[in-house]
Image 1: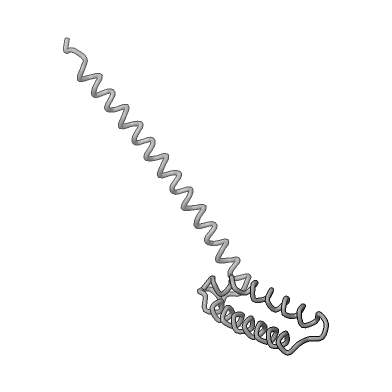
Image 2: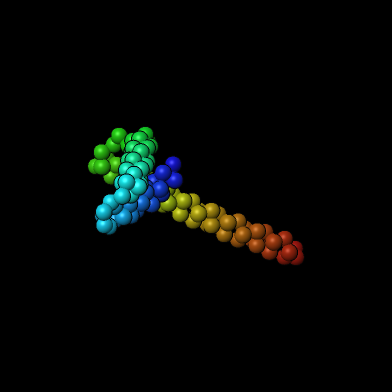
Length: 114
């Protein structure tokens, strides 16, 4: 799919080069044919690219609707990052508490009975 979009610029350059050759001096039949071929090739590729773009998910949304979806997703991402940070802090706290308990148990176990 991206190959189609990547090929648009080189095909446009081919049209510009063919146009330049056709306008340099008296245009030859070959220069005209080259220009027609390059133009038709570009037109077909552009048509394909438009068809692909129109079938993309969300392509039916207006620009404003797309912006709303993006904003909603950014808020969701921020919430998830906050949840992850809280979870990480909770795990760290539990780990620290567990280590302290182990040290207390080890200390108690190694203390001789009186």
